[in-house]
Length: 558
Image (cartoon, rainbow, N blue to C red; front, side, top):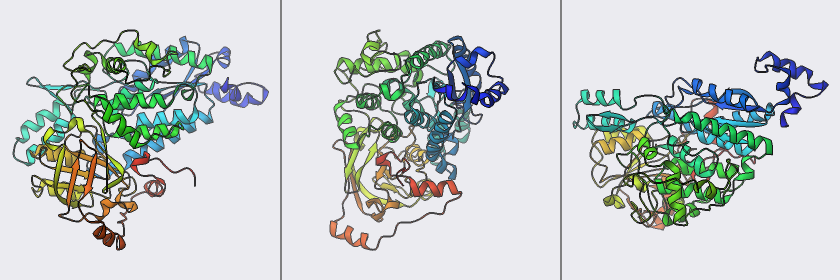
């Protein structure tokens, strides 16, 4: 066993002495069993994780029952909703790299034989997957599960309802008392926020990648069925440990293509693009935005969950879950069903168990999709030579093409102030730059500005373009990840107030209608803005991070 290096032979007597002191070793025979890392992410301040201290206990018992010895450790985690709209969001995306590095450190330093990962929200999921790719020991993922939606007068509510309510109050369209009611009801308990936001999108993609048990992404956090899911995950993990099968022995380019097919078919968060590019890179299977765009254009949208509709994760689960979507995609020949999974079977063999669509209002058939194309699109043009990403599933038909004057802001705060004071008018294109991985630094999500635009009734007439990124809860013509970013000299840094910008989401085009001669003149005198940074970590991050088109990963070839 891999763990023999810390527990076998006379030279390891000191190691065994320390292991005994932990109290995890119960009897001498435990030294002959595989050591299993239980990578938890319990944190009090994140509702998606607050229940994981109790959630993990049965997993550890199942590992013991299966003949392993569980050793739990925890990761950090940033709650994006709480960090949103202020400087705290600058630390969110960088936390993904810290999580990946710290988990890799723990797994390598202690020579574990396998690992079961318990993530739930935002950066924690991809950070853990990146670490699993690096270490390549037997690994299975079990998320903490989604939050139930809140209900007020029969209307389903979620966190985005609160953000958009803030804009409505500022516009005078809602009374503060009504907002307070929404605030109190929208997030009714533990779990990752109830729409197809980043956390739930990533937990669903784990099923398509073949790294998690069916139901991982959709079964609610408080649903007793998650107990059976945990048992299955442990059983599969111990089989992988016995056969010494790591994730890189299972994953292939087809696995990542399947994941992206699911992503565009269900209109996942634009952040899934950023994270899955980073994961594929760690796996040694880099994925291009051009290939992703091709997948987006050729895959139908079969499902729309909040913020793209009134349906929530509980509705997706009721309708059949992720595997019902995968089954429909497979029926149309959109998936590689020979892709391997942690179950020991191929994706096709798993689908043969018969995952049915139980509500065609939530998950549509291939014959009647929401859209013949997928819910995510990659744009290219002279404003985004390396690409930009938009969640078309959340865009109203009238905004699929838009042309208007640029309203230029060098920070989220400047843009938010202009929106709040009524300076943004129908037809405008709000440009928020210097919010990319380097420019922020940290590539903040900008849910507050996009929610304010929608809350003020401008969602069907105003576009927002940024080298930053958006929450999975963002809806509207919000184009993010513009690459190259302003801080590295990208064209978005050359845009001036009043320039005409055109976007065509159908055909994947994002252009600045300024002549090449004028752009050359501006470029000759252009000097990127360098924002002040608090803390040494963000200074190091800014120096090492790549742009969004490359997954915002840290350079390692220094």
